[in-house]
Image 1 (spheres, one colour):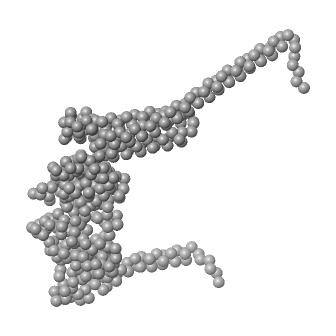
Image 2 (tube, helix red, strand yellow):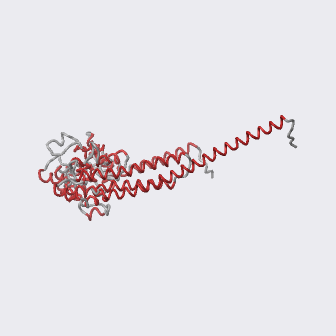
Image 3 (cartoon, helix red, strand yellow):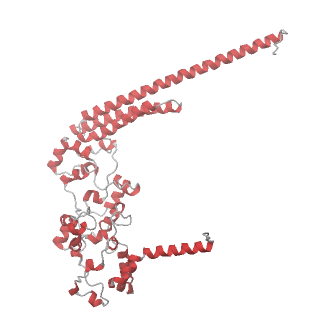
Amino acid sequence: MNLKLNFSARKLICFCLFTILILAGNTDRTFAQQTSSCISCHLEEVDDDHTELVESFMGGVHQKRGISCVDCHGGDASAEDMDDAMDPDAGYNGAPERKDIPEFCARCHADPGYMRGFNPNLSTDQYSKYLISGHGRLLKKSGDKKVAVCTSCHGVHGILASNDPLSPTFTLNVPYTCANCHSDSVYMAGRDIPVTQLQEYESSVHGQALLQKGDRAAPSCAGCHGSHEARRPEPSGVANTCAQCHNYVRELFVSSPHKAAHEKHGYPECEVCHGNHAIVKPTDDLLYSSSAGICADCHENDSDGMRAAKEMRSSIDFLKAHIDSARNVIELVRFYGMDTDDPEYQIRQAKNKLVQSRALIHTFSPEKVAAVTQEGSLLAQEANAFGQDLLKQYGFRRKGFIFSVIVILALSFLLTIKIRSLNNNGDSIQID
């Protein structure tokens, strides 16, 4: 039997396999259309909205998990007649009113027993969290139709899993999902909420990390405000919110004299100095400078607080100067091709001390900051001294090389003169 296939036969086989794969990919949809009058009827409607409804549902997470139209809306999907399919006696409940949507979705999503059949690790407390959120409380209090409900963020029929990059609740998309309402000045009119959050967030250190660098560990709106329980944090809770990522700094602040002052006046701790949505990467000038020091917002120039700020800034600048000096020397040593592993390690250690000293600013203790900057300065000075020794060695070797070249040239010159002298005297040098 000849097993070799000609080119046409191979093309035919490939075409058949491709066709089988296409049909297999559409099996769910074809089966759904054949068994659900909801699907078939809505596809027959001339209105594009009906077709879009079905198209979006067929690609959504609910359809993929076997959830059908009747699981949400009730009715009889096997009935061919529309009146029979949408008969209230058959359990048809139609589309819920906007104010009822959270409770409507909670019929399944707040039932641990039911949801366990799909994902035993999926949270089922979304509805209870929503009820205590700013959205939920306002909806319950006034029935405001503009308040965000489940479908505002997740969509209606084409709901996608939150780990799907196309989902509105995917981490990188959350700021823009929230901004659909919160950046719309017309939609938010009459509410005591600004509409500049997205613009400020995009320029912030958090926004740049998430939206520009794609760092999904960076906080989005939900990271600070919560998702289903989203609300404005209380002033006393701001530091705890920031502590989800910046716990070490939070501990330093708690031990500082500013903690009691913030509690006394009801200040939102971290936010007082760093802001909220437009948080930028802090610089040393934020601590103290002639124009940008944040401490001056609360402390008079001759106060104890301002003196502490100046001392801490002075200590940090002291360490930075030693690091810069050592780095300049080591870069020159590296340029000359000499080994710099040891001093470079010391400089890295000094930089770590610089980072630590900047964190210790939150203790508002000049003594603690100075102690760390002194340690860093010693490391930088050791690196500098090491580099200076290498430069001296290089200088000595260079001088030795120059001296050797001069000696060789002198000997060559004398030897040349000697040879010429011998030739002038009639002597010759014979080489066998």
